[in-house]
Image (tube, rainbow, N blue to C red; front, side):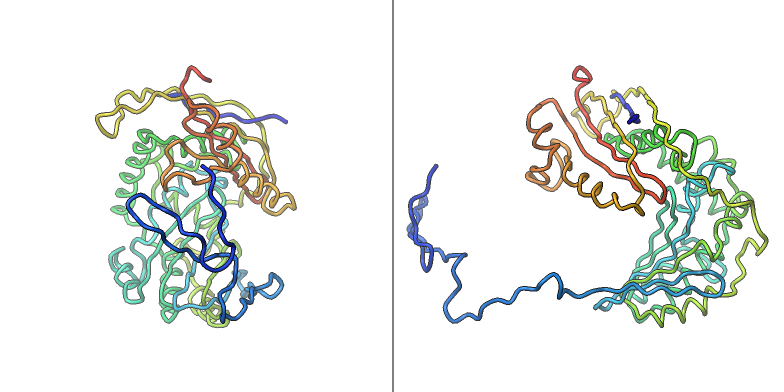
Length: 395
């Protein structure tokens, strides 16, 4: 099978009783301390009844399709808070007919001023009344607008999500601020010691060259000044349609969520009008394979007096399967078994130390700085990757 590659350079214990109080052990500066057995039940304590797999609580996902094609999905769950989001079948893979970077712009513009809310501060103050927080994330095939808040504020949450998704003002000032934010993010990505985000972009570009999930997820610097309100409205009119949206919620009653969806998302005129935009890109991912190399000078990048080690970063990828196929679970298990991480991973020693990459790579070769497995899965394809970092002499 052809592979895609992205390369970025830069002592014994004495006997003790099994039940009751074990034999005392001596420690320096202390006496003998008794310990309680962890294998024998305590006298007078009822026998524990453990939950069986077949008797565990099941959470059913209920789905309702409204007249305009919008799907409403929910799972009820015990608790006072809920999480509700609008997910759009859109992303960088659909930008072949548009300027690259539109999804990145929409992600940064999310939860700005709308028809009902004059500013982002007003949105945040509204959410604070219900203990809520908001977030927007754009991936290659999905854009998600989500809010977590007190379940009693569901009506306000759905109203806000509908307004943010369908009625954004996209003012000139907000678009200019977004341009500045994207330029800063791109500069930060190129100066960050951890190259994983850049390698992920490169491995997708090599594996699916110039098509679908191989298109750039981040806005190129040269496109930041070209994307304006008209370009965004043209894209939104094609992809932000009810039949490409799902209103999903966890921790609320399904009937209540459907009622709110009918109230705020049925028959709503979007700010870009109801006219049909360009034809939706339904291209299927085509795996091509290939190699992409980038050489960077990191000598002037440092987080302190100690210079960053000179490393070469390599990522190797193989085509896997989509999340709709039966092999998705075996690939997910394989990814967890491979595991891995960095020589100085955050979280303390021992994290993932029995995975294959830790045992067979990091523990056996002192010059390896990183060896990590990743699995990216989409509706029509997937990519299993291994990222490795080492001294350039060891490549």
